[in-house]
Length: 406
View 1 (tube, rainbow, N blue to C red):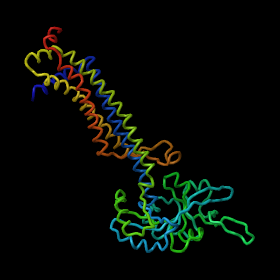
View 2: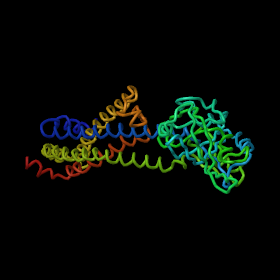
View 3: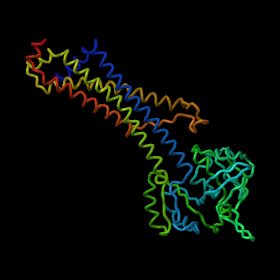
View 4: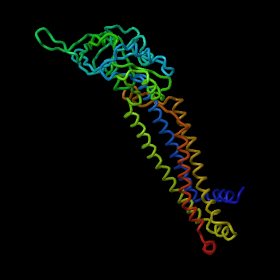
């Protein structure tokens, strides 16, 4: 063992008493709390982000193929062109438009989707989110409502609602009326996304075409599902070479860019705020080492007079800070990982979950990279930087004066 490691270890053990012990313990506790808090909070935020991402991807397409000029005509030909792509695992035509919904005195706005019963499950996880009914049983006069929309309309299974299309109907006397149609509620869906469940309703593609007077074999969009949700840009680039110029593609990342940017920003800011705990603990490390230097001033003077270089003295006290940082980081990591594991194993419930909030169980997702690695590296870097200040001061002590003062 090198002399500076031996002396650093000896000083550290002997310094663990009295007021120095108290402050060094506070430093270690501060780092422990900071590391544990960072791991737990970032894991919870990862869990919320992942849960939200699953809901977005599960209820919408990975890639949206649309036309610059109205609906896509002869969509089956377009599907035949792109379905041979090895990255694509599901394709379905889906039309959509804003609409008014009326049931008794209740009136709501919403977005009506026309879906193909045979292929829609390839791109949207209907079976996972259906509360009542089955999409395969949806008739041409039927409709599936989002749960929140059904509540606001007071609509139940088997009840008929009136949908009002933006398309207008001109009567023989010249009067104008919006086109309306009665649809029977044949299913309720709950995605866990309030905005979706409050405004989305689904009918067959054939019924949508009638209501909006679209030509047969046409759709406003083609939904595409791919193997890897993070490779959508690559697939879009491949599709652009095969498709007509009047068609364009967008992926789920572009469609939800603001939402996920806000989540990333929130995670970064929260991590930055929690990191302040570590900075406060780092200041305590400076105070602890300064007090230790004052206590060991005589020993420092003797070591310098024996010919030990300033760099050796600096390294001895630098190791004191590294010891405290390492212990705090290790304890914080263990506590943080154990708490995250406990939340995941015991399915900790959120107060008001399922009624006030859509998520009833606290979601967590522990990420070794980049979160855990960056936390450990960041804390150790702060510890080393804060330890350099008092250790550099210790190395500049005059050995003669240090021995004389003692």
